[in-house]
Length: 302
Image (tube, rainbow, N blue to C red; front, side, top):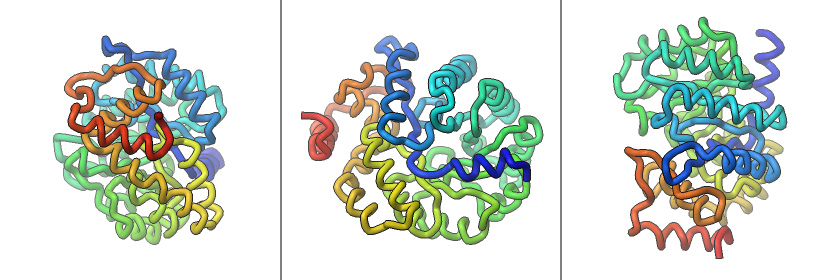
């Protein structure tokens, strides 16, 4: 394996935020607020930033907007932390084009969600990821989130894909620590295993995971950074002490489909405008009090 691929493996760890894509009330991307969020995340200690993942509303941006946001993101970060670009699609040619654009923009790694809706077989998943890896020479991360895609990347398929040099990591958002642990044991040093589920991420780190790609880190980046820095140092007791008071936020950020609650929270915190794209809509009023109370408990709003 080339040194470049080994190097990114050592950098894909800690607290990584799946950043929202701020929008104006018109639905246009709010680049001013995006720059402010990026700066705030880095100042607060976030280790890696994910551009245009699920939380970044990748499914509602046009292909041109998708690549434009990633390019702006990378330019603004300017090498301060690694940038993971969400470039997955359920159309392999589209995923290749997005991944190529991200490479040209200078992304450190591409995050490739399992193809959604068309429900490929395990062989189809393997061939999809293999085709992207062969087409674009950039470190790539598998993203297994069956709750959103209705397809599950089996461990046997992950093991086959781990033989491909470009594939360096997997974001496991199944929420199953046992599944993550089995991946860690099978992969060894071949693949970095990261959590994509805030509620179970610390537990996965305790059994060898390298960190968390987080929704909650959008609103409380400093604590999430401290939790996973401590965990990776092996200080699980102190990590747990910091984590326990914010566990309620993980639940609050999923009272409706993400990123609806986290965008509401960031708006309440004064970080973004009230912008989201159809078919997503603003947080239902019946959840406002519950979410506000969670934010107050964490001292994020008055």
